[in-house]
Image (cartoon, rainbow, N blue to C red; front, side, top):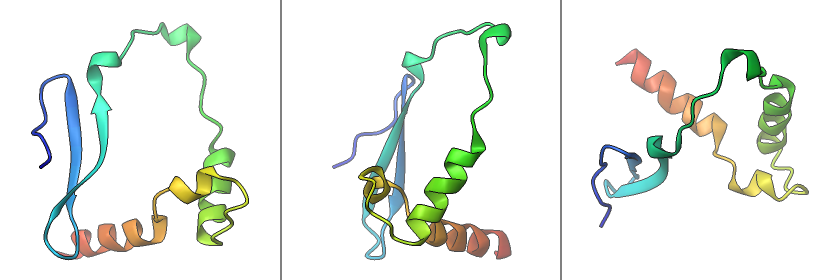
Length: 84
């Protein structure tokens, strides 16, 4: 059983192909910290592009690729949602 989201923890839940709810992750907003804008740095999106490419090619030589989401499947679901 997946517990309900509470104010400090948002649970990311989806239904699988069998219609059963699956916990995909959590967003712990209780762990957010304030950071002055002067201290923020932009994330290097080239790293994200590299991970996307590694996952698309199923290149599991880097261990983190195994735990990465299936981006193609997610994009297909997003497209389906937008068409409805």
